[in-house]
Amino acid sequence: MVVVSDCVADVKNIHPTDKQSVGLRLANMALGKTYGRPGPAYESPVFNTMTVDKNKAVVSFLHADNGLKCKDKQITGFLIAGEDDVFGPAKAQIKGNTVVVTSPRVKNPAVIRYCFDDATIGNLSNTEGLPVAPFRTDRNW
Image 1 (cartoon, rainbow, N blue to C red):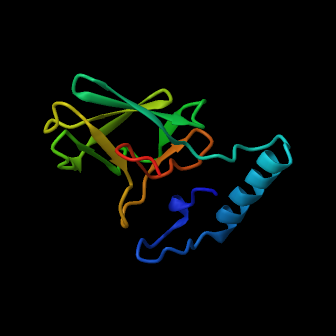
Image 2: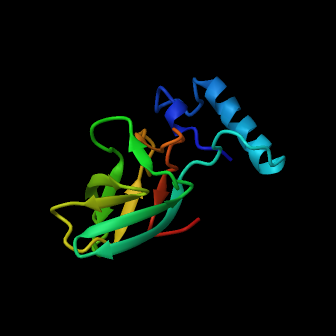
Image 3: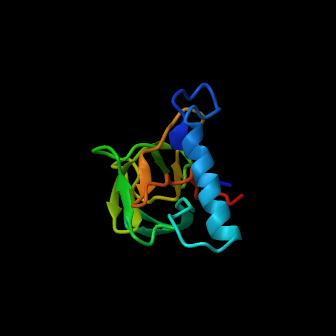
């Protein structure tokens, strides 16, 4: 499975309009993972762990060994909640291959979500340009 959330132009239509990127990602995954051929990165960053340091949640990812990047000035799509499970927008900053997530409203972070709804297109990717997969830290699927 490959992440194609960045290939969608209209969030009301789940079918990616950029079919070429979808096909290329699937082909790169087949060549790399199944046939062991060296080539471009084929796995998107996926949530690995979340640690809490005072009022900051630090999120780490698999498949982000070379770091992360944002295609805009600010990272969008992060929500944060404390023990009360009341989610609100969060500020997110890249620190190497992790993301530090904060909100002045949440003093003790408990849960982070990224693009975990039907209408948010994220702008965070690994340095190879593959988008971070949507995730939630309160339940692993």
